[in-house]
Image 1 (cartoon, one colour):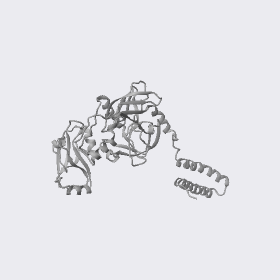
Image 2 (cartoon, rainbow, N blue to C red):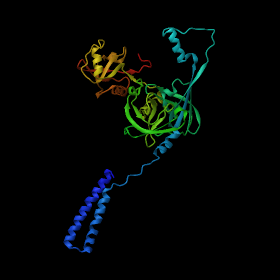
Image 3 (cartoon, rainbow, N blue to C red):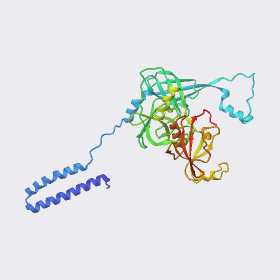
Image 4 (tube, helix red, strand yellow):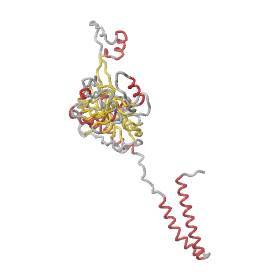
Length: 410
């Protein structure tokens, strides 16, 4: 028969106390002889102290765990979670399959043949469903930009069944955040938390409308923090994602990710098509900052340098050193290296070059591509960034003034 460490520890304490009590009792017996009455009196004096010592050694019972905390969190936030039905009209001639077939026979540069006598192909309606959550009682909502991208009409359905026509006030594809306004009052508002004390292993609760199944609640844990957009598989975004194993499926996009207290800590946005049990959410601080700017200005302007960069490793180092187009020799084995400077960009104007190894921006050390993006984003627009690089083994300081990220990158 086995014993747990806790049981063994308690047993050891009892044995020690028993030996102590026995020794004390024996001393009393030797002193007083064999009088059973005296012995009993001496034991009666020793045993209460032993019992008190045992009681103090046993930890006080912890407070009972609220086994309904997931239900409580869902009940707290659920009324503020909405379903978003977006639709857009697409001409049948724009069918991607049609375009692929045309390219197969006529090539990329050709133009589709025109047949004036042919009737115009009818438009078809493309529909999609996502989620969102209410952030103000007067009808301001947050969702993903890809949920409402290109939508002609947006319908918002509340948990109580009411439906409103929503107006997209702005969308930022760089962070995948969009904002919607509906004409309503006294709406339930989702309480916003923060991610400052978030750590892997904590509870995560997702609410949304996966696969059209309204008000679905799933739970899991925070799996990791600060996942880069490249790691997630959407390298065109500028977000450090929260990773969770709470079930997130198509239709969950734009819905809230909650902590155990029922506070929104993120906005669910992405799943990996080739994986199971992996979901990603935009931290609520990022979503809130972008949404505030979208409500105020209808768009978000992101700073842009005009460089392509990679995290350096030994394999990349060897490849660069063998590439005659780089015209540099890299000595370091790690860091952030510029592999291309775009023409007619702030980086080119400032004098950044291929092969520069970025060490610091505005005095802050950068260890990977995400650090560089974060520092550029934090620096803002039209403000000089002090970029410290290693060029041909020597340190250089270069001042760069970012411009607005173009809608179409070169």
